[in-house]
Amino acid sequence: METPIKNIPLNDLHVALGGKMVPFAGYNMPVRYSSDNEEHLCVRNGVGVFDVSHMGEFFVEGPQALDLIQKVTSNDASKLVIGQAQYSCFPNVKGGIVDDLIVYKFEEEKYMLVVNASNIDKDWAWINKHNTMEAKLTNASDEYCLFAVQGPKAIEAVQPLTPVNLSEVKFYHFTMGEFAGVPEVIISGTGYTGAGGFEIYVKNADAEKVWNAIFEAGKDFDIKPIGLGARDTLRMEMGYCLYGNDINDETSPIEAGLGWITKFTKDFINSEALKAQKEAGVEKKLVGFVMQERGIPRGHYPIVDEAGNSIGEVTSGTQSPSMGVGIGLGYVKIEFSKPGTEIFIQVRNKNLKAQVEKLPLLKG
Image (cartoon, rainbow, N blue to C red; front, top):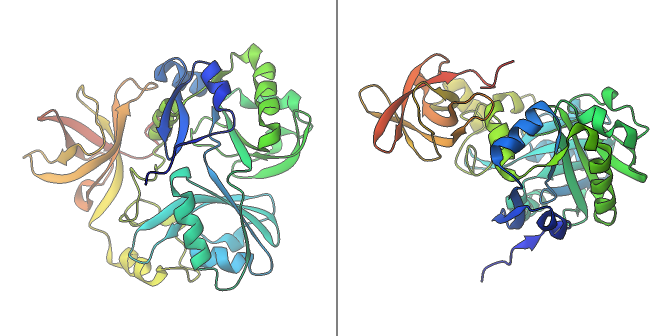
C-alpha cells in the first residue's frame, strides 16, 4: 500500500503564492514559484526564503543523550558547546550512510537531530534500535516548521523582527529567542546554499505569522519565496551532498569526501571498518567538476576517460545559474579525482570534456 503524500503546514499559502507543488520525499513541496534561475540568483545576490518544513527533528535527552549520539554519528559531538551545531552522518554497518544530519546542542543533556525528510522513519527506527542506553527520544518532526532565510541580505532583512543580534550568530551556531513576536524560536546560522543566512525553527501554530512577518520585513530587499529547484542548484555550486543522489546506504563517508566529519577519536557504529578503509585508501571518490564544453550533466550520466573507458558516474548535475556553465558531482576512480584532472561526461552519446575542481565549484 502506498503511503499518502503529506502536505506541509503552509501548503495552501504556497499554492496561493503560485508555487508549483510536486511530490518530494513524501511531501507536496514547492519546486518553484517563478523560474529556477531567477530564484537562484535572488538567493545568491539578495535574500530568499525556502519552506523546508518537511525536514525531521528528533530530540535526544537525558544523562545518556551524548552516549547515544556518539554511538550513532560519525562526528565527535563531545566537542560541541551549548548553542553550537555540527554536521554529521549516521554510518550503517556495511560501510554506507543511513543519513546525513545536523546535531544541535541545547543543554548538557538535550540535543536536537535534524534529518532528511525522506529518511525520517528509517532514521527514527535506526536510532531507537541502537538506543541500548535508554536516552529519552522524541520525534518532533510533525510539530515544527522550518524556514531557511538565505542570502547576503538575510541579516539586514530580518533583523527588525528579533532582539537577537543576528550578526553575532556565528556559522553553525544557534540561539533561542523571540522572533516576529513569537517566543522561543530557534534561530540557526545554518543553510544549504552557501549564500549566508539563517534557518528558523518555529512551532506549526506560529508558522504562518512568522512567514508573513519575514516577507513584510524583507519587502524593501525584494525578498522572494524560493523552491526546491533553486535549492538544488545552489547546493550543487557549493558541492554539498544530497542524500539519495551523492550519498546513500552504499556510499562510504570516506569515498564521499566526508572524512572531515568521520572522527576516529571515538568508537561509533562501523568505525573500525571505516578506519581500515581510510588507512587502506578508497578506489573511488566523489568529486566536483565543471564542464569545459557546452552540455548539461545529469545524474547517472557515465563519466569516461579520454579513450572512452568508464571511470565513474554523475550523481548530481545542472547548468549553474551563477557561473553559466554545466557543473556536477560524481564518483570517479581515485586516479581521476585530483583537481585539474580532465574527464569526459557522456551527454547524449557524446563525450564532453570536463575538469575536476576543488569544492566549492563557485569561487569567490
